[in-house]
Amino acid sequence: MGATLVWFRQDLRLTDNPALAAALERGGPVIPVYIWAPEEEGDWPPGAASKWWLSRSLAALAAGLEKRGSHLLIRTGPTAEALARLVSETGAAAVLWNRRYEPAAVARDTRVKADLRAQGVAAESFNGSLLFEPWTVSNQAGKPFRIFTPFWKACMNRALPPLAKDAPQHLPAPEHWPASLPLDGLRLEPAIDWASGFREVWQPGEAGAADRLERFVAEAAAHYETDRNRPGLTGTSRLSPHLHFGEISPGQVWRAAAGSQPFLRQLVWREFAYHLLFHFPESPRTPLRPEHEGWKPDPEKLRAWTRARTGYPLVDAGMRELWRTGWMHNRVRMVAASVLVKNMGLGWREGAAWFWDTLVDADLANNTLGWQWVAGCGADAVPYFRVFNPTLQAAKFDPNGDYLRRWAAPL
DNA sequence: TGAAATGTTGGGGCG
DNA sequence: ACGCCCCAACATTTC
Image (tube, rainbow, N blue to C red; front, side, top):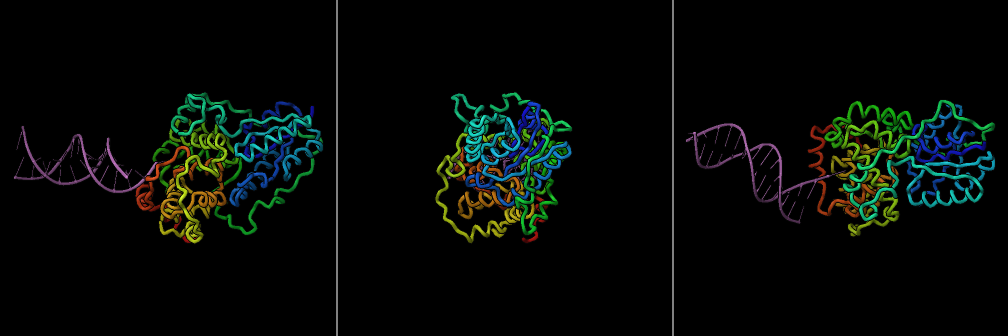
């Protein structure tokens, strides 16, 4: 039986991983590989915070594989060439992976699949990142949804897809492991150590994701509906980076948090973001609605926003939380984005680009949806007259000033 | 997942 | 007991 390559991408986990489960099912040796190819990501190669996370997450995945008698191969792109070379080095009969939905990734993966099949190699992709594939959810007219609530209802009417079989304690290994680059050879970690605040907050990898989920369900899920809006509390799950890198699957999260409808709703917002990105692949660049085109570039203003010098205490606290931890509470993200677009007159893409570089959970689908929602140019967006008042928002959602105090120290 | 203005309701104080 | 007023709490409307 020939070996099977499992091409890891944004599914850096050994539990509920359909591609890995299918590879094990085939019976031969399993060869896990990660290919670093940022030049294939179109306009959105991973930003600095994402690379920091990726480095740690790959290390965690590699350690998990070693514990099971396996090994993570690291290679660099071009992906098609790297896979072809690995196939010839290992005599692999199949390459399996879990799907991605970003336009550049879809185009690249389609070519890779065709190339492999032309070489006589079995190539199959699986759903490892979403509850429902974007092309399987549609409205009465058979069209993609553009409004959240009907999408949510359609999702709630469907059966939860089953989980994949978890990886066993021992993975079948090939007789010889092909060469691998060292992880630090990818230079994902910053040369200057700006990530000390990140390390205090985050534990990238499958174990960190499971721990975060367990704590959320035990401590916060019951009060999620109200506490999720309080940035001074730990009222949200903080699973976004773990979900982005696939260290945990939405199916696992859904099952653990099934008692909290308001939280499930947020999980479906993530599904909706992928639904929109898949069906409207131009939307990260060209929104569905033309609103908010009257902005002018202003590097000084933009710099003030990025460096936490807007003068709005809640926004500046948020920008400092982002800078220090690679994450910002969602309530504060909405206010910070609203201020950039509606108070400062800057373009949403400029804010989105900063978030892309600084967020550990930077995700093209979610980032695009969030910014277009605030700017009012997306599929399901706030009307132009909906403007957040940063002072009022602080009074409402941080009444004791806990959040402002926590992120008061200047950068 | 807006804010502010305007409208409605009901409890309680008071003469 | 009753009517009147005030006001908070909530609901509705408007941008």
